[in-house]
Length: 157
Image 1 (tube, rainbow, N blue to C red):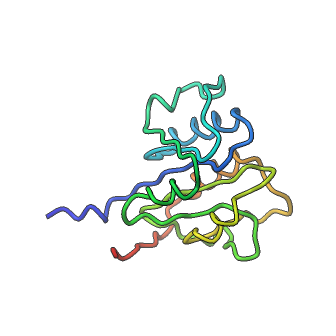
Image 2: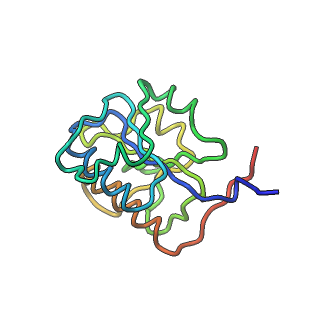
């Protein structure tokens, strides 16, 4: 029998993205870095010149009107990893990514919502004084996931 919970995958998306250009850059990187799907919460994707690979036509794209709708539809066995500059967040360089997870980024001006921070299984941050552009942050997270680091395995509930 095949154990589907052994397969690795990840999705990546933005909550209340501020600019469509950031989405386009993130989607292009997600496609190149092996994301299984992309998503938005709140603001929707709009076609951007910076998404030269047209990722939304090349991989699954989901839109959720609210965080709760998104959270209710997390894939079975997936961990929610919030990317946020908070005291509770773990430094990215020491973080072991879950085998099955969903990365959630917030808009540069507001970050993740309080509820998203509370509901995240993990919070990760960069060792930097100031925040970085959301597309850059997502790209760094995906690059770090691709480095040969141990993976965290979640027990099936």
